[in-house]
Image 1 (cartoon, rainbow, N blue to C red):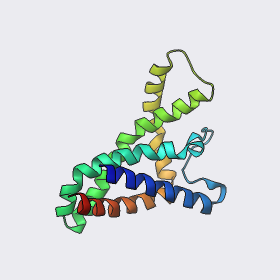
Image 2: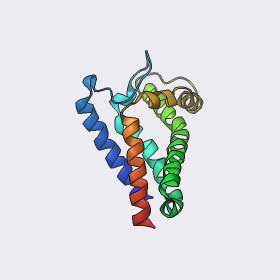
Image 3: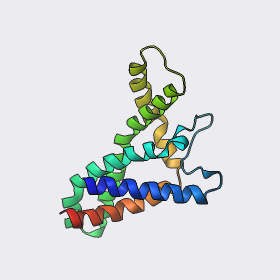
Image 4: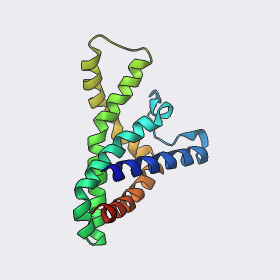
Length: 156
């Protein structure tokens, strides 16, 4: 698991900063209108969440991945990506609301609101932000396939 998590985080971070240098206005991640861009201020914190869950899932699927033919490997990669996104969305929403609270918006019963609003925001708009994060998300999907393939060979 450490291989998958660590490698994915290192590669995702490198690719983020390479794209940051290339893309005009440095907007690697997507965003919605009038959204405070905490994911631009703290990109590594938002990158580490899906990398962690990718590490867990890739480790779980590694044996099956290694034994499979290319078409099933592509299907498993897609499954890992979808599950990683689905599991990561609420945590990304919680992190966004935490950054919002750190900026001076701590309400009463902040922990309850952090979890409730964070999970709702993650599922509500998180998927859309990921969808808008082209070419980063496409590059991530390609890396996911090859990293899972390499990790399955090394770790199993």
